[in-house]
Image 1 (cartoon, rainbow, N blue to C red):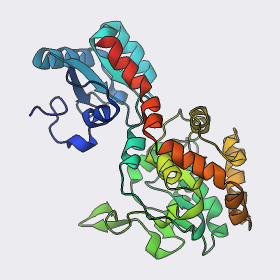
Image 2: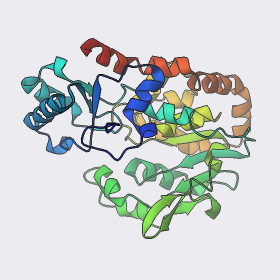
Image 3: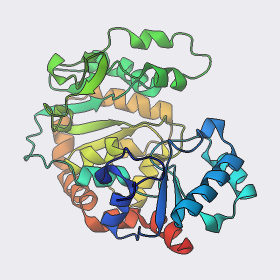
Length: 326
C-alpha cells in the first residue's frame, strides 16, 4: 500500500487526512497528501520551493497534491498564499488551511464514549501546554478556585510559551512559578516519564474537568488570533458541559454561526472584559443554577456536535476545494 502522505510514511491511517476525508465521503483516490512537516516551515516560507514539491509530487504520483496546512495555527498563511499564487497555478494543487476541515471534531466524535457524567464539579479548566494567555487566566483565578472546581495548570512546552509572550512583558516569568498546579494533585494530566511529558490517557479517559457544569476552554490561539477550533472546544461540548472560550475571540462567532448555542458571557467581544467576566464566574455561588437553567442548551449542543450531518457541514470548505480541482 502507498504511503498515506507523500514522502512521509509515519502517520497511521486513522490519524490521517485520507481517513478523515473517507469518513465524510470526499473522494481520495486521485489525491496525494503532503504533510506540513514535508513542506518548508511557514516562517521560512519559499513559494518556489513549495512549487517544486508540488510538481515533484504530481510527477511521482500522477495525483492532485494536497498541501495540509490545516491542523495548526499559522499566522503567516495569508502572505504565503499570496506568494504561492505568483508562482503556481491554483488548479494544480489544493491548499487546506485552518477551518477547512473539522479534524478535531471528528476525533472527538470517534473517541471513547463516556458513561453518563454526574456533574460532580462546578467549573473546569485544563491549561494544556504552556501559553501566555492560558497562564494569565490561571493567575487570575487561582485564588478563587474551590475544592469543587477542577483546574489544572501544566508546566510543559516552554518553547511555545516563550513564543506567545507579548512584547514588553518583562514579568511573564512570574506565571511559571509553582507549576504544575492543580486544585487536586490527582487531577494533573501530564507527568514526566523517561524525561518526556506523557499524558495519562490510559488512566484518565474522561478527565474530571469534563465532569463539570461549566468548562472554561483554554484554546490554542490567543484572543487576538484568527479562528482555530480544536478538540479543546469540541470535547466539552460533546461531553455535555456548558462552555466559555478563552482563546480566539472569533471562535465564538464561528461556533454560533454553525448553530451552537452559547452563554452570554461567551459572547463578550472584548478580551479584557471577557477575562474579568471569567474571573467573576469563579466567584459565583450559583453555578448549579446556571447549569440547570441551561439544560436545553447543553442537550442541543451535545446532539448537534455529535451528529454526522454537522460534521459533513463543517467539512464543506475542504470538499469544495477538492471537487473544484478534480
